[in-house]
Length: 305
Image 1 (spheres, rainbow, N blue to C red):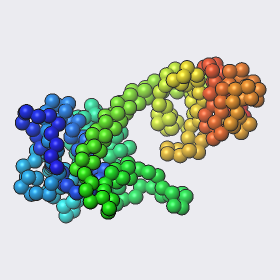
Image 2 (cartoon, rainbow, N blue to C red):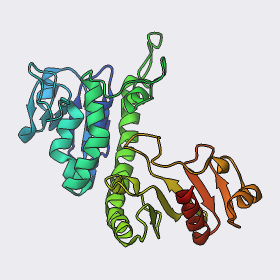
Image 3 (cartoon, rainbow, N blue to C red):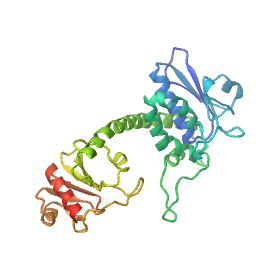
Image 4 (cartoon, one colour):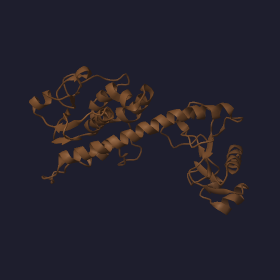
C-alpha cells in the first residue's frame, strides 16, 4: 500500500508491514505523521514485507528486525525484543517511536511521560500479550483502544476488504486522537498549579473550591484530606464532586448523603435546605446547584452528614 500526504515534492518513506495491523503500528505511524507535518516535510506511507523496499525506508516501524533509533528503525519482533521498561512492560513499535519523538511532538518531556503512562504503555503491553487488568465481572471486560483497532481488520469472510485503506483511516484517526491528547494533557498539567493553589488556600481541606473548570482529581489524590471538589460547569451551574478513594476507582472517599440520591430541583431543595439545588446523581458522586454559594452549601452539608 502506498499513500502520499502531498504530491510533487520528494517524500520521506514511512514503512511498516502489510496485512493485519494492531494499535502499536497504527499509533507509531500517527506519531510520525505529526512529527513530519509539523516539520513541513512530505511523506508516503508504505505497507510491505519486501526487504528491499524496507531497506529504503526513512522511518521503519514494526517490521525489519532492527531497533536503532539513530537510523529510525523501530521494531521489537527480533530475538530478544527491543527492551523492557523498569515496570516490566516491554516496548512495542509505538513505545519505541514515542521514546525518541514523544517529547518533540508533545512539546515537553513531562507531557510525553504522562501520555506514555496513559496511552503508550497500555498499547505496548497489549501488543506484547501482557494483561494490565483483571475483570471483576465474569464475561465482561473493558473495550480498550486495541479492541477498537481490531474491529477495522477484515473478518474471515471479507476477501475483498481494503485493509490498507483501513490502516490509513485508522492512522489519521489516531493522529487526531493523539493531537487532542497532547492538548488535553498540556492543559491539565497547567491547571495543576491552580488546583494546588486552591488546596493551599482552602480553610477546610476536605472541601476544595475551584474558580475554573480544572481537572483536579489527579492533583488532589495525593493529599489525604480532600473529600469534595466544588467548581463551575459549562452550563453556568456549579457542582460538588466526590474524590475517589484511589486512582481508577469509582469508590468515593465519602459519598454524598443517601437522602439526596436521585433527587432534583424542589425535592432536593426541600431535603437540603439549599434553594437553588438542582440535582444529585443516584451514584452519590455528583450534586449540582445553580450558584457557587449553593454548591458550597451542599458541600458543607455533605461533610457534616
